[in-house]
Picture (tube, rainbow, N blue to C red):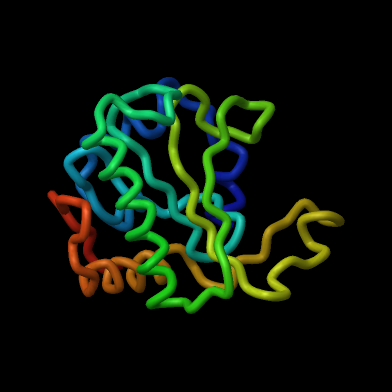
Length: 169
């Protein structure tokens, strides 16, 4: 029920979600998993499927190119880090990885580019989103957070500088 009550409030507040989380300490209460030099990795509070993660740079911009080659490289490495953590913990059959720029393209947070890393499994789509406008997620977000925080701890830091890590729920 908490999830359903909050779903209608998404985007109701002032300011940018990602700018508001840019200084947040990683934790299950805000779903931030890790902070890096150029950005951070978090769970999506309203996921398409279990394990749906997002990578956002600290800089508020809709540019995909980043401010520098270093920022670009670290954000891309963070996307790959998210994918590898999901592979290790959930063994998905595939991924949707991408960016929604602008509201018509599906962006829930407009003006601050962020990358979605969505694990997919053969047969994971069903009639619920189409007929009932409801998504069925098989695991509570705090449990997903705990599992992915542990999976990220086990990964080597390749291409990212981990400044802070989240802790299990």
